[in-house]
Each structure stands twice: as structure tokens, then as C-alpha cells.
Length: 490
Picture 1 (tube, helix red, strand yellow):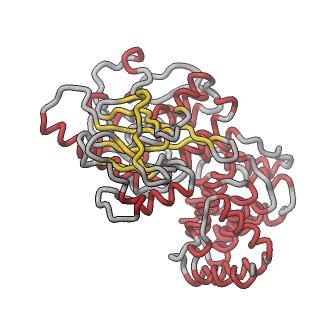
Picture 2 (cartoon, one colour; picture 1 turned 90 degrees about the vertical axis):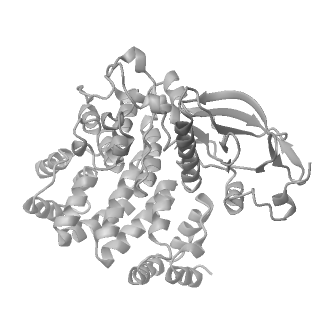
Picture 3 (cartoon, one colour; picture 1 turned 180 degrees about the horizontal axis):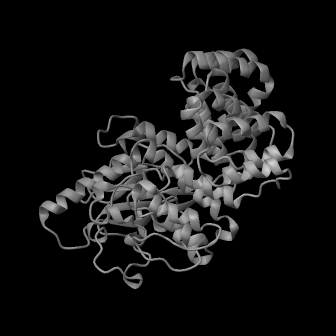
């Protein structure tokens, strides 16, 4: 067999996504260039010779996909998902679901996010079509079977899932089949672990319709996590249908008893209100975003300083309710924060701020939003936080960047940069880089450049951390920021 044309540098039309594969190789996801010949799956080793990928065992499968573990000759393993019809159906319907399989592969391969499993290579014209992904350590379901709280680290796992879903939802892509089996576990280079979302966009048709609503018949299956509005019509999928599934996963971790599929979760306890708001029968009464779900969980789970003063307690109770504040209440709260900037009560009160409340403030009272945004940004830069809290804070800071004036935007961006690099939280670091890229408003870039200069060599250290942490290239920043960094970091 002839060497792979990619490895030899020749043009080989069936080997697509070369640039993507090269980048993934740099990130450590994929050490082989894979292509499909007229027969088994092959890859090229470093010498350019074909290397066969041998099936090891079946990892799982649904109505239209079979996943198996394959090993290359150098010992590295990958997960291969192959189109497979496990039920009898008309040929025209088989063709339709095969197109859906291809769409899933193309969608997943076009997304670059740590918490979304990458597609390393696909052969969608093969018969049957298939694609390759990095092999996972295990699924979230495997970990939950051993310990439903994941050794106390369940909130970190939820934060990873939220980060992946948030990326999808911003592109108006909805998972439709979120469940613990479709959340996979990987290991960072430093030995720590993280979870990534997989298998979105394709759901088995026979599993998307309910016939018998029983625990025994559906436990751990797709419909055990599916939102009721999409069990009969996938076209009704939305961010809220994924939020329903997320609520079911959270229940697996903190729930107090069994639940009925496709129903609201009603139970007491610290997380009862959150679980019910995730799974409301009325779609418009669920959380507005996955970020809001994480925000609510963090407010319940994270230890915050005790509020000492009566005034601070009043504000804390207002915010903890999650309800919007009126103009007078916002004015009083902001004045309290400004008048007691270094007080411990301020930290406790600011910790209670909810994402939806800040959105409401930004939309209705812009001047006060700027005042609070600047105070909040300075507060974030002066504190250390639990790992899980960082994502929630970053989401609030992003709102101030989106809705504030130039000064507020610049302060919030600096807080994002500081928070991400000081806590080594990739989600936060990526958010800063996305908001500061070449598409950034030029006036804001010039204003942020002023903050860079004020920070001096410290901002150089933070940018260097970004480059190592998330493999970021500073040339991707807005040109004004690039020029400023060149001047102060040379």
C-alpha cells in the first residue's frame, strides 16, 4: 500500500481537515494523521507508512451509531463512531438518518472548545460512514455509578458541562440527547480531569418517543433525561430542553429520591428550587440559560462570608431570592457597596449577585449598571475564589463588557484576565480572548490598552500565562492590543 499522501506532502483529496488535524496534534489530541483506504481504517506513522487501526472492543451504541475503541500500531487508542442501524426501517428513512449522522459529525468537527469532544477525522462518504474522536477515560455515568457526588467534585463536572453547552447554545445548536453517558472524561497534562460533551445532534428515533412511562423501562435511557416537549418532536428543541436534561443530571448528583421521566422534579432541600426551575413543564418558566443554572448552584454551594450588619443582611436576602430589584433597591445597594468598599459585608453581598439580576439591571438601569460593574470588577480583582465560582463570576463580567460604557468594559475585561490567569481557569481565559480579538471595537481596544500600560509588566505575565495555558497566540488580539504588548513586553 502506498504511503499516505498527507504524510508525503502530496495532494490527497480524501484527506480533509488537514489544518484542523495539525492544530489538534499540537494540543495533544491526535498524534496520527488518519485516512481511509479501500478496506480497513489506516493511519500514517511518523515515517509516512500506513498504520492499521485495529478494533479492540465495543464501547456503546444507540439506535444509529456504534462506538468502538480502536488501537494504532504505536499503541495509541481512539474512539470510532460508525453509522449503524440497529432496527428495521424503510430504506428512505435509513437514508435520512444517515444524513443526520453526517450532519452531527460535521457540526462537531467545526467546534473548537475544551468541553466539547473534538472530531479528529471523518469518512462520511464511506459505507458505512464513521468518524474518530479521542478515546475517553470513561463517561460521567461510569463515575456516577461509583460515587454520585464524584468525591465531592460534582459541581466542577457541572461547570464543565455548562461550559460546553453554553458554547453550543451561543451558536443556536441544541444537544437534544444530553445524559451522563454522553459526557466523557479526559485528563489534562497536569494530571487533573475534566469532562466534555459528545454525541449531540443525533438521537435515536425510537428512543425519542415515549410509550410506557415507567422507571424500570426507561431508567438510564435517553428518555430518562429528555425534556417532555421534544419526546415527540425534536424540532421543539431549545436551550431550555437541554436545561431540562441538565437538571436531571444534577438530580443524579444531589437528588434525594427517584424521579419520574418527563415530569417536574419536586423535592425539598437546598437544591429543590433549582431542580424544579430546570425541569418546569412550562418551557418559558425554566432558567433562561445554562449560565443561570450554574450561577444558582454556585450561590447555594459556595461558602460565602457571613453577613454581619442588618443592612447587609437585607441586601443579601434580596439578592438570594433571585428576583429582580426595582430602581430604588438597586440605588440603595450600590450606595451601600460604594460606602463600605472594604467591608467584609460587601464581599458577602456581591457574592449573592445572580446573572439574571445583572442582566435585568443592565437592560433597565444603564447608569447604575456602570457604577456596579466597575465596583464588581475591582472586587473580583482583589479576591481569590473557589474554582467553580470563577465561571459564574466570568459570566457576570461578560454582561458588563457587553452592556457597559468604555470604562466599565475595560475594567471588566481586566478583571476577566486577572481572574482567569490567577485561577488557571480555561473557561475564563477563553472568554477574555474571545472578547479581545480582532473584531473588538477599536475605541474599546484603545481604552483597554491604557489599562495594559497601567498594569505594566504584570499584564505581560498574564498574557504569557494565556499563551501557555490555552495555547493562545497574542497576534489574535486586536491590533491596538498587539502593538501595546509589543511596546511594554519587549
